[in-house]
Image (cartoon, rainbow, N blue to C red; front, side, top):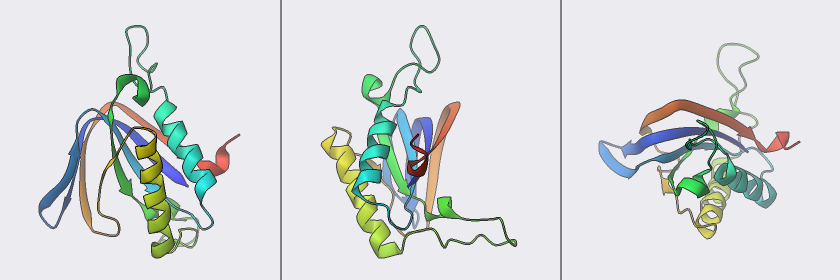
Length: 149
């Protein structure tokens, strides 16, 4: 799994001209699911995201976690995180999981966050979305479950 995490002042998702969700201060998480991802990757990334020390405190601009600041999460599925652009001009998405399986893993990820006390607001899986955010910092971090150590 891959996640692009952005510290935001606010974020919202619009589908077909209608806002479907929004958050205040917290994290926008763009989540990509790869072939073979499952419970281990879900648990690893969910816990890592909640514990990333990327929020400010009085001593340092990146010292507190989402748990510490009790921020919100906007979760948006993003299969294009597995776009391979090494050959040609059009990305190949061979590593991205098939939509049905990706949806199941995405749902498991959202559920895991909820069980940890951070119920995410969400985009609409598979829809064309307009994702708005006000990046705070800017702070953007890339996590990949394949690069745990």
